[in-house]
Structure formats: C-alpha cells, structure tokens
Image (cartoon, rainbow, N blue to C red; front, side, top):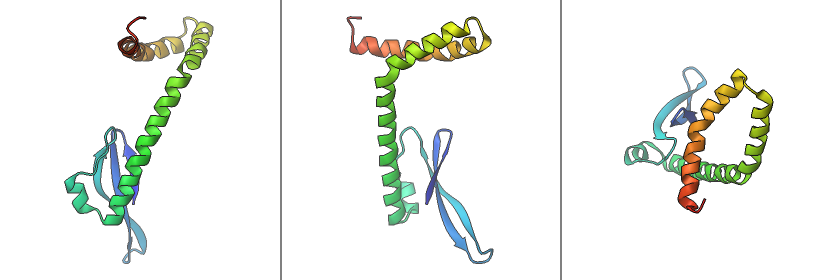
Amino acid sequence: MHFRIRKNIVQLIRTEYDPQTKKPKTTIIGRMPRTAPVITDELHNLLTSKEIAEAETWIEQNNRITLIREEYAALTLADALKQANRWFQRQGDSEAAHIAAENLIHELQALRKTLKAINPIS
C-alpha cells in the first residue's frame, strides 16, 4: 500500500498483481483528510490488518514530520525574516516584491495575532 497526497486529501492505494494483464493494478481504497488524517470505521473495514498498521505508521510519521517542520520554521524565523527583509530592500518596487508582499501580509498578521496572545506585553 502507498499514500498519495492530492491537495487536502491523502489517498490510500492498494497495489495488486493482475494475472490477466500480468501487470500491477492500483486501486484507491479510501481517503483521509490531509490536515487531520484518521482511519475511520468505514476505512477500517476496507483495510487489511497489515494495511491498518501501515496507515497508522504513516499517520504517526506524517504528524511527527509536520511538528518538526513547524518547530524548525519557528526557530529559524528570525533569520528568515532578516534575509527576506534584505531581499525586499534589494528588489525595491519590483513586481516580484509586490507579489511576495501580497502573499505575506495575511500570514504576518496572523503570526502577529498569535504572538500577541502568547506575549501580551509586546
């Protein structure tokens, strides 16, 4: 079994050998939301015990990867902001700078709100 990420969905895919075509055949067994993957009762009934174990391992590893990425991003954000600031200063009034700034504004506002909630003195 393998897992295919499609936008906000994780597809669980079973590969079986097809004796007629003499080739492997893939079948999508089910789907889980990417943001909160969980094996539902319906999905549990469709999977073998080995596939359930694989799915649980994948969910655990995926959650760990996400937590590590988030921690790394938080711990290196100050340096990344310094570098981004230098880039924006070099770009000046360019189209690339405008596009990047537009994409950043919402996230910066959300981050500021979060930081204010955990550190109200600022």
